[in-house]
Structures are given as structure tokens and as C-alpha cells.
Length: 65
Image 1 (spheres, rainbow, N blue to C red):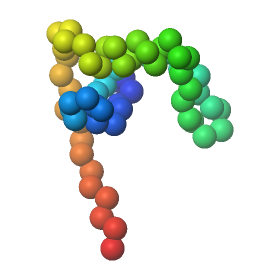
Image 2 (tube, one colour):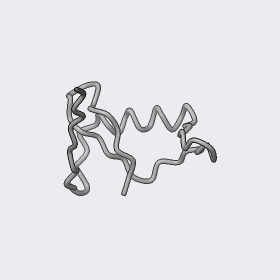
Image 3 (cartoon, rainbow, N blue to C red):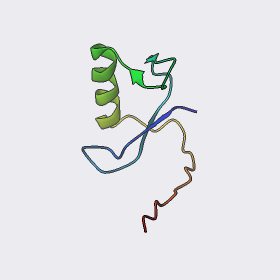
Image 4 (cartoon, rainbow, N blue to C red):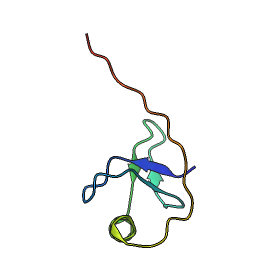
């Protein structure tokens, strides 16, 4: 499955992008992207391209007492 991002900054929708090249820290798992990759991700997220597939995403709620 592709990486799930936070809500879209532009429309508030969910954004999932597949095939995104990233460097990944071997200790904590943090992902790093080259600037040109980030620009392409932003362009893709705001484009009006046809959605390739739809997926169901489980939603959990954090309950802080």
C-alpha cells in the first residue's frame, strides 16, 4: 500500500500516494524526500487527475482521559 498522508492542505481530503521514493532512517523509520519528489507529490495531490483506485482506511480515535 502507498504512504498515507495527513489531510490534504488544499481540500481536507485524504491523500495516499503510491511509488514515492524516500530515504528511510534505519533506527526510527523517519522518511526523507528529495525536493523534486516533494514538488511532484504536491502537484499530484492537487491535480484533477483521475483517481486510480479507492481504498478503505481504518479510522482510530485517540481517547485521552
